[in-house]
Amino acid sequence: MKLLAASDLHGDVGAAEKLAKKAKDEKVDLVILAGDLSIFGEGLEGLLKPFKNANKKVALIPGNHDSEADIFLLKQRYSDMVYDMHNYAFKIGDVGFFGCGLANIGPNELSEPEIRRKIENSFKYIEGAKKKVMVVHVPPYQTKLDKLGANINVGSTAVREMIEKLRPNKCICGHIHETFGLEDKLGNTDIVNAGPKGKIIVI
Image (cartoon, rainbow, N blue to C red; front, side, top):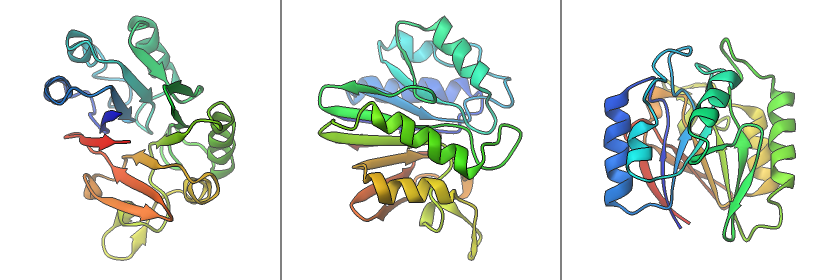
């Protein structure tokens, strides 16, 4: 399965159009948008239209700039092409997708115990899948992806704990603009900060 993962579009329809073209050109099976689609709700209008025009399904989670209501609105508007991954999990073939949106900081904050609980609950629905993809907004703590400057780690301890416990094949995140496009590894789990330009992931 080929995925196109991206994050932190912040209402940029031009970035969405480029991603939709990439998804079509690369013949991806699913687009994943790992949060911060908007700027506190602004910029959602028309953001998914390029993907609809490209006939691509999209899995979404909210970031700390989005609310759960924002994602629900998109799900309602584009019900034939959107998977809401913040409160749900799903399978495509033998690949299970699970995770949790929002972040451990900001106006749409979740506490670390809440992040842990949501990820665990989501995982239960795809536990039997042969391969597993975890999608979160905030990166795991103390990795290459959560660094602000040389020595400041701002990631989620709960996300790291869940990766180490549940051992998904892939973990897709965003949030930290300074590490867009970087990749790391925890155990056997490949982790990527997708960023607005997007990353092709094969699983």
